[in-house]
Length: 260
Image 1: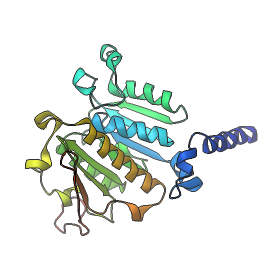
Image 2 (image 1 turned 180 degrees about the vertical axis):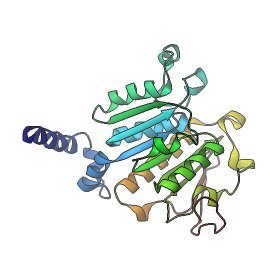
Image 3 (image 1 turned 60 degrees about the horizontal axis):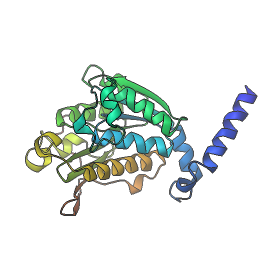
């Protein structure tokens, strides 16, 4: 038992010293923050454009436990933006969740990864997200986003919402009991520019990368205790025309059926 503990301690020190050297040098994280990341448990729902970038970022950052969920297989239209997949994956006939786990283990073999090949729904969402320190949204439709939002509010688990289509992206950090939830921000399924999808409007791979990177950063802020630096409200970005706005939404909707 003592030998096992000492080996674990030595391994952790080596990881801190080498693999995460550049991240440790970033003062808001440092050794204390990196230790929290190494102990963190994140659930990422959806392994498409957003999700594949998010899980890659988290694995490289040293997340301790990663639960990944998707119900799809890679196809040729995914390759221009879904960073973990390549042409060989198209002929494997394996799910995105299995392929993603294999790729992530090559990136960082110390991350414990649980892969789930399922469609997220009201019958399994609570079981899937339980025991998570944080949930990160990589889905592509608001019906599912609202489902995840409700489960996170009910279970008091922070949620990092993200959406990307055309050249537009949106991100919001939702902390149950402290911030407005997704249903406060969008009382109903949004229309016009707020409900664009890659299917109906196309999508630039650059906006996907940017939104996923911001979502990952928000998750790292939460895991390391840097709460004051997190997004307050809804961040909206258009990479083509390079517009960036943060809509301040500090108060909950008193009529919200989810968080009130």
